[in-house]
Image (tube, rainbow, N blue to C red; front, side):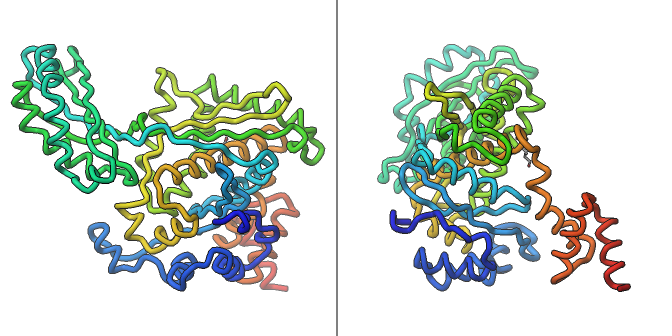
Length: 430
Ligand code: MEV
């Protein structure tokens, strides 16, 4: 989106889904197909689904929302998020609005290399095998490159070999080859898996061992994304809470996650609430990113927070999030799923690095939203209105009854399905 097209859309929240979609279509010049795909009238059909997975019988729907207010590296971006949990889209949008005060998120990617692993067993001398592999490194890399000549032309391809030796494992000595592969704008699982399978005969010949597993690692720590934001203290004032109190409360909340894995799991889950939502909207493999994120959080031997929050010298709050983000803008569902294609087009993103920078920024915003709520009024109040509506629907409310039942449950401070059913029943009697 251009500078004139700001991601700041006051009042967006109050529009109907159709009006929101219309506004976006005008703002972003969406084609009719994109418009329909984003709105749920078109999108993935059963025939396409049948080509994606086995035994397909239908399509499963989830809400698609738009996070507003984001500025990432000076560029305004409206962010599609697919998520069933209330408060996620609102939380990210609201925090992005606070971060706008200081120019938005600054994000970067560090590397675009994936790791393919080859497990080699039955080696009589691990050191000799390792030396033989290193001696023939260039040959091995050239062979790996043959799996995708186009990727090579685009500047990607096999970059390096790493050898890891495990003299003692439950089944005896083991040598692991890491094929380091730059997959550019693709997530790269298929390319890397094809490459490591292709290398089997060469690796067996050189090591005089037996190749067993050949598969990419989801701990893609050579493909990190980092996002940073700074929020002036006064911008953090809210309700009866002073900015200074909110800022310090957020740092205290982060410190809890930094030292305690029980808290870190929940803290990181909050980060992934935002990250997964954009991954799903753009057709990316969210399980791969989840696996990589949590493994990365435990890289020092103890599971900890993926983000860091601190007070800067001028008293502002600074947050930084770093995590592996193996995402693609080509290949896989990103180019097959009509809604994912439209979501990427809507963001105006065609480079995987830029997508990773935006996604890391959403993760940081989501973390800030959770910590700010937890460190002040708690998260339940913010959750109430949408949660109450969900409970009302689950109890059988439809149309205007949804709002009526939800509001009454909020007013009475009891949001439970049995209570919603009772309100519905009372309404029918009167
Ligand atoms: C809920 O989905 C996410 C939070 O639990 C995250 C957190 O505790 O930081 C609110």
